[in-house]
Image (cartoon, rainbow, N blue to C red; front, side, top):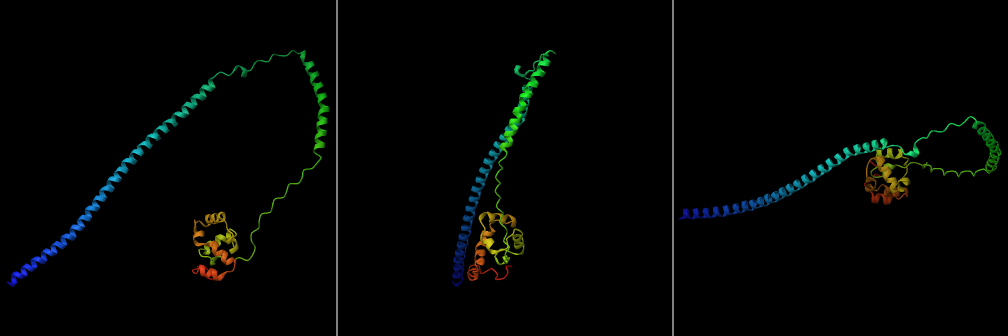
Length: 239
């Protein structure tokens, strides 16, 4: 009797364990089926995109072939037009007409008229020269002098490496650009920031690291506010 009871109990436990394992496996199987369906939909979408892009590529190829054909035809038509233009007869108005030879009897009269014109032109030339001399008497006003370019600051150089983001290399590059003080950095405009970032070869770093805000506090001598707002900055050297 006890053996039958144990066998029945083992059978029930085996059924429960099998049902539990089957439930777990069935859930995983459903999950895999869902992922397989999503993969198939993604594959179909990619296939549709591939067909669409292939059609666009073919259209671009045809357009390119048409443009190349037009480019090959254009020089030929222009050369033909130039050839037709060159072979066209010149207008009658542009053709040179032979000048009739003058008789030797007309030469003395021509020489006489030329001498008369030169004699009449001399008084006119003298009057014109006198008028030019009188008009050139007043001197022109001197041109205004150009304003002298602003000189670079010659004060004592500050320790720029106290600012977060300025190390030995950046400090050297800034000094090469004439930047040696906190006040200069504090007065930077957007154009100055863009120019300096091109020299230092990085983009947006000045705004991210707040160089101008740090320089304003140090230029004003507000060490307490600088230490509270930028605690990671070294007090004597920025390594």
